[in-house]
Amino acid sequence: MAEDWQALPLDQPLFLNLDPDASIAYQTAIENGFLNELGGHTRFPGLDAFAQLGDNGRVYLHDWNGDLIAATSKGQVYRVTQAGTVTNLTGVPVSGSRRAIFAKTDRELLMAAGGPIIRLRASRTELLSEDAPLAAYIAWIDGYTIAAELNSGRIYHTDAGLPDVWPALSTFAADGNPDNINSMMVTPFREILFGGEKSIEQFERVLTGDIPFFRRWAVGDGVGVPYAMIFADNAVWTINALFEVVRFSGQISQTISSAIGKFIEEVDDWTDAWTGGYPDNPLHVVGQKFIIFQMPFATNPYGSKGITLLLDYRNKQWSELYGWDDVSGTPRRWPGWSHWTLWNRHFVGGEGVVYELNPGAFTNAGETQRWLVRTAHMASGNQIQVKALRLRLRRGLGTNTTAATIRVRCSRDGRPYSPWVRRTLGLAGQREQIIEFGGFGNAYTFQFEIASTDQAPVNLVKGEVKTEALGH
Image (cartoon, rainbow, N blue to C red; front, side):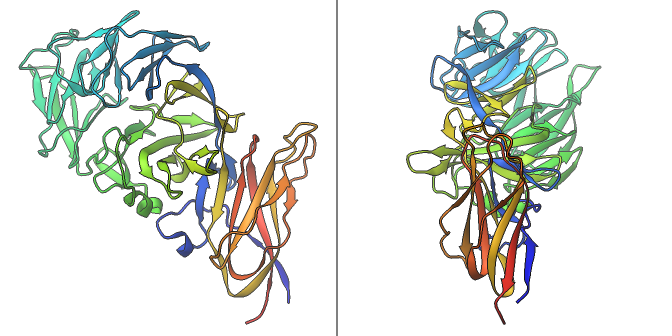
């Protein structure tokens, strides 16, 4: 029988809209990595601990006056300098039991989490105004501070230039549809967006007259998940009421999540779901541009809690981020609760800690980071023998005495996976790009997993299997 080298379809994107056993050609898992623009796979950076805060609350990040600002779910507010020095700025805590939202004005940083609006002007946080509404969403535009009242469609605003004066009659409503406001954003184009489950309405400034804002248009796609809205690539991205990830610009929306639609629809818990970098600070790292969507309490395919989706929004391709439980040896929630870019560095809010994404680190602050690619089932009409598998990747990045490893295993005909076959990524100077893994037996279908848990970058260029047909 003739032998033939057959390419693994590693250049195809992630596809989760069918059961993995029904997928053909596409990847069925890309974890802690992404499909790069040349069709190869690149490992996502790990996390270094940057600053330890004074409590163990979830950390939400922003910046003010050249410093990183960290507000926690415990209500505390900290300043973190470029050197990692931490100062507690809490005079009045940020209360309300929701995710902390920030808004910069021309003189202060505002914060709200479902309770009173808090401001930071100098060295301590303080109450903005006794007359301000309880707010989960705040914004600032052209001298006006805007707050969405909790559990209503009503918006309050100050007079221009008076952020602590809230006239009782200075209100308007996003009333294109009678649903409560669950999100608010001022875009870089100075548009004010109010989201509810049924629609998103755009308001703009009126430069004359007594009413400072007017509604220009509405989008039929509503915001189904509070805190899941971000501006990137001249458009707004959100999760709508049908649990689709959509991109809209003007009044035109486009569904981006078709390839992972089934996976998103089966999310069992949307509590505290979030999109990173709100309102307009997506993650630009390792030459790519990403948006993070996290459902921290959702059950993932491994049975633990936490689903984190990574969208390469320029190429419309998906992957997943995971942490790792060293005790059980299984993935768990990626440890971030927010992210922010400052000083051309990328920071992630954890629990009582600020991490920094480090392109040269491949653990999550000492916790194992497993990079993994899982193919669909390779099938032919006849039984075949895989006599060899080879990978082409970058090697020789170890030291003179130690080298990281990469490993491969196979599921034949949907049965349990074989033991891992490990190969070295090379000591320093061992630059040969091809690694051979030997044979993987006989079957009608083959599904491969390629993984690494060691402290090393992975740039997988190509994979091939040597096959022989075994008859009809």
